[in-house]
Figure 1: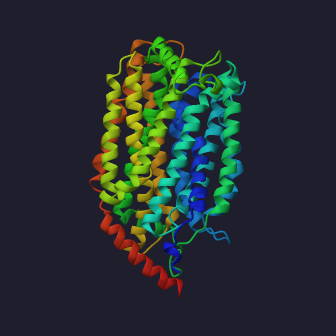
Figure 2: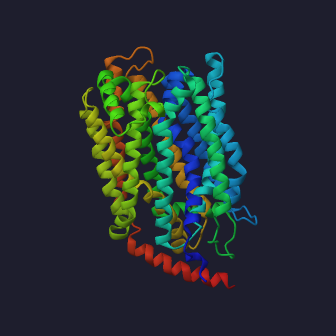
Figure 3: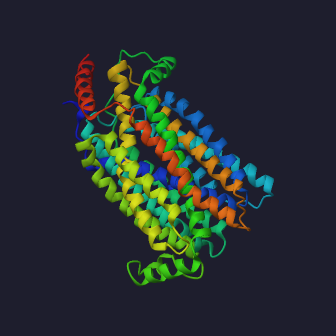
Amino acid sequence: MQSNTQKLSVAEKLGFSLGDGAANFIFQTIMLLQLSFYTDTFGISAVAAGTLFLIGRLWGGIVDPVMGAIADRTKTRWGKFRPWILWTAVPFGIIGFLAFITPDFTLTGKIIYAYITYILLMTIYSMNNIPYSALSGVITGDMKQRTSLFSIRFVVVCLATIAIQGFALPMVNHFGKGDSAKGYGITMGIFAFLAMIFFFITFFTTKERIKPDPKQQSSLKEDLATLLKNKPWIIMFVLFVMMFVFLTIRNGNLLFFFRYYLDTESLTIFIEKANKGLFGLLGFMGFIGENANVADSVFSIMNILGQLAAIVGITISNSLAVKFGKRDTLIFGFLLSMICTALFISISPSGIMLTLILQILFNLSWGITMSLPWAMMADVADFSEWKLNRRSTGIVFAGIVVGLKVGLALGGFIGGFILSLYGYERDAITPTAISGIRMLSSIYPAIALCIVIILLFFYRITGEMELTMQNELAERRKAHDHQ
């Protein structure tokens, strides 16, 4: 039996996917709500929050390669990467909860608390997510199985995203009853507990199958040198930087777009109509009522619909990738996403339906792209083994996740800094600040995504090369398995 190309069971695919669902309970909150949490609930300025994001996420980028090297050198009866998911499950949940607590401190005390908890969160996230990401590269060497695995993974990610984008704010309003600090604490406590459970499931349902050549010497210096010779890896690194600059700027400011730009009366009419139609249980679910904020409620509803559209995008992504290749499918999805993002600048304050249409179209096109960059990361690890005769899965994934963290850091800092340049203050929203919010929800992130599209034209791992790598590597692994 060729274990490298073994077909994965649905249970293993789902169990693996729950690990990313768990991580996204925290990750999506960081992406979507943490800037508004820090400014509107925690009580620090936008520029202070942006600086915190820059420092904390760059710190995470330092931890990532260290964690990749450690994971590559971990030897247990469970494998190299799985045990880290087990060991970090409980700390991840605890720190994720503490990062959204608002202590009764002075402003200086709050900033110190925010730095400590946020840096700890970035550290434990790296310790958990780098081995988890690398695990996807050693579960199977079969390209079709790998693409299928990532499709299921990102359907679960969408469901976790629905939980955060759709239900987190209504839960905050429901549990807080006007006290958002209390609401965030209870809400994030629930999600942090679920994350711990999901991590345990991932550990117990997955298996590592691909191992490096036993003759390969353990050398961190050689691992890093090999990365710099791997041109697809360099392209993917920069791509992840710009992709997450885009996501952080757009998603981090979208809530402000709903709260301060869209017309309250128009939002109220929309939610009243929605309550009579598709969302007849809105009151029960916490989207309306005395504790609900109408802008937050509409924002949550649109995110639910958007993530359902993203699931549709994910389901068609696999067949598009098989027919046209991962790279060309990615270019197509990113191009549509960029257009939908840029068109947000054309929305009027009363344009609630246009906002809904563009949000759904954006998520549909983004869904097409969601799983593919991560599947391409595994291809890049294969390329290193195939072309450069060295497999260091943890380092390859860690290096690209560093790009993700750098993108998060730059995007968070740029978003907070530009918001402050436009004069944003929580208690005094000026027309200039609103102009900045509109640009940060449309044109500025679209520029970042344009750079991503250009980068993809330099990525050379085609569908034909993927098949060649798969077959040749399968023969090599079979040979060293029998040594």
